Length: 515
Image (tube, rainbow, N blue to C red):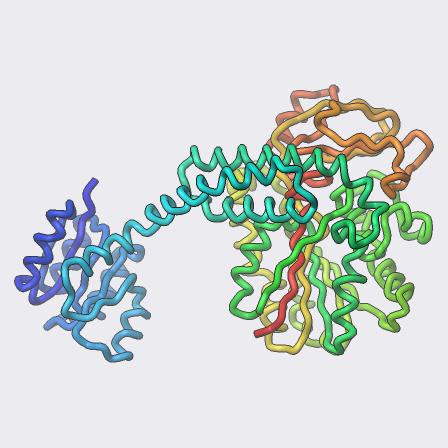
C-alpha cells in the first residue's frame, strides 16, 4: 500500500521536482496552495503525513497546524519554513509537529524525513531483530557453559533487555526469544538445585548477596555517610518492571542498578521477613518465635512484624538508630505519606513497603477483566507503568529528588507467568500456594520442582518432624488431582511467585542519587 502525502505550500509550483522525485519512489503526493484547501481535503480523505509551509498568505502554517490537529490529532506534520527564529520553532513544536525543516529543502532531505517519521518503527524493529539473532548464539553459548551466579545475572539481564527491545516485533521472533528464555530457566533451575544449598554455607565472598544480607550490606553503609537514607521495597517487582520505572526516574536521579538473589521460597513471608530481620526464616523462628508464623494464612498476615524485625536487626548490629517503617497497602495511605514525605528526611533511615505490584499479580489471577487488559508479559509491564506514573510512590520520589538523600529501591521477589501445571499429592494440611508448598509427605514430578525433605538444611522452619517443601521450577504451578481440570484452567497463565526462576530470584537493587 502506497504512502499518501499532503503538501501544503503557497509556492507549490516551485516544488514540482520534489513531488516528481517522491512519486518515482512510490509515494502519492497531493499538492495544495493554502491552509483552507488542506483542511477540506483532510476532512474527506486519509493522509499518512503532511508537509506544511509555515509562511502562507491568509491562514498561516501555525494556524493551519492547530486546525489539522483538531481534525486528526495523530497525523504526523512536518513544518517547513524560511525562518530560524526560536519563537516560531517553539510555537511549531508546541503544536506537536513531528519534524522541522528550514528552506531551501532538497528532495533527498524530504525523502529521509518521510522514512524517519513513517518507517522508523519498521526500521528499528528490523535492526533490533537482526541484532537479537546475532546475539542468540552468544546467549545460548553462555547458557550451555554452566554459568556461575554472576553470569546468570548477565544472561537474565540480556534476555530481559531483548524482551523490552523486541516488544513490537513479529510474532515468530517473539516466540524465538520466549523459547530461549524457557531454555534458560530450565538450566537456571538445575543450577539452583546444584548450588543453592552450598550458598547457605559458603563464605560471603563465595556466593551472591541474598535476602538477609540486604540491609546490613546495602542500607547500613549509606547511613554512616551522614545523609538520610530511604529504602523503597516494591513487593513482587520484576526486573523488566524496574526498567520501566527507571526510565521514568532518569530525569530526576543518577541511577546505578545492581542485582541480588532472593532466598527460597521466593514468597513474601520468607524473602521479605528475611530482608528486614537480616536472618533466614528458621533463624527468625528460633530467635524471635513471637514474630514468626508458619501457617497458610494470607501473605499480609504473615508479615505483620516487619517493623519489629527491622528494629531488632538495627539493635543487633549496634547502630544506635531507630529505623522508621511504613507499609503502603492502599492508595489513601500512599497519598498521606506522600504529603509528608519530607518529614522523613529528619530521620537517619526510613523503610517503605509498596504493595501494589503484588496486589496486581494476585488480582490478575482472579479477574478476567485484568487478564484481558494484560494478556501477556508486555501488557502486564505496561499496566505497571501506568500505575507508577500516577502513583504516590512516584510523587514521593520526585519530591525527594530535590533533597540531599540516599535512596535505595528494590524488591523482595519477582513473579513468573505460570503456563504449565504439574500434579502434587499431599494431605489436607498442605499449604495452598501455587509455586511452593510445605506439608507432610508431599510428592510431585521431580522434573518440575525442587524437593526439600530436610527444611533445616535450607534454613526453613518445619511445623513438625514430617514437614517437607516443594518449590516449583521453570514456569510450573502445582495442582491437586481433585478437581484437576478446574484448577488447571483457573491458574494457567497467571503470574505467580514462590518458585525458582530467574524472574523470581534475580532481583534489581538500585541506588539513586538526586541530580
